[in-house]
Amino acid sequence: MSEAPGPLRRWVLAARPRTLPAATVPVIVGVALVRPATINWLNSALCLVVALALQIGTNYANDYSDGVRGTDEARVGPFRLTASKLVAAKHVRNAAFAWFLVGAVAGLVLSSRTSWWMVLIGTTAVMAGWFYTGGPRPYGYFGFGELFVFVYFGLVATVGTAYAQHLNIPGRAWWLGVATGFMACALLEANNLRDVHGDRAAGKKTLAARLGRERASWLYALCVVGVLAGAAIAGHPVVGLVALAIYVAPIRLAVSQKNGRELLPMLKYSARAQLQIGALLTLALAFNVRL
Picture 1: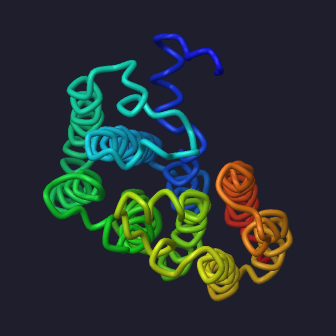
Picture 2: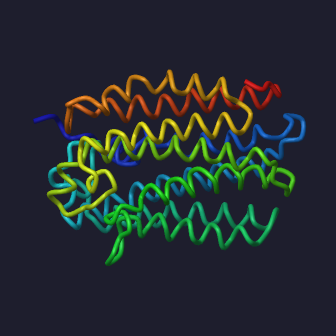
Picture 3: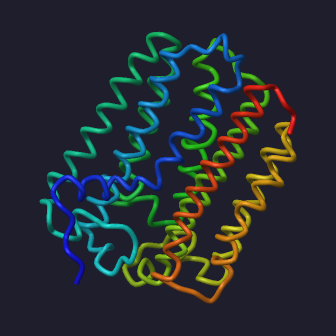
């Protein structure tokens, strides 16, 4: 049996660092939509804090809710605080609330500088983060997790960040939000595909679990096609084609006969792909190059 992580490392691991590109990439892409000399750096920083706080808060909330339900008992993925019983469940729940509070405070400051409508959007984001696996009828257990990820870590994060710059939304922001949203969904599918059998046994009916191991692999491939389409329609077809090449390794794993722990590298590959494609899009936008 491997040695249990130390007091600090266990919290870092449970924050799921490899999922954080889902929060950072759409914000950076949204910022890059405006000319570098006109970037509102304070609003950009607030958008990043909101996105990261919501992502980490959601990760801790999932750790808590899945842990107390027993869903994580047979999980083969990253370390879990609640299921490991190294940390009391209430402390994990409180950590989730603390991160949601950080996001709410940053969101309030951002709203005061932009539009108070953002308070409503932020409130729905926090609720979506908690009820993904929390509450009496968590929607993540019924196959709606992809919708949450696509909307909040794609459209809302990208378009909202672009709006926070100069209170207008460039037309390309929506399609770039589609691209970042599908990248985030691919990250989610890397998790759900790995956990298909365990989730089915625990009654967690993610979309991947509903489709089954074989058909769910094509769901991952569909997410990659969505990245290509979003980038191409936004005016960056070359970036879309590069994205397709970058995703070759995780796609091969997805359509292979591997299961469970053998699919662990998919999360690493998907997170790396999102960072690489996000960097390429940012450079193309910053230098106004239609790639």
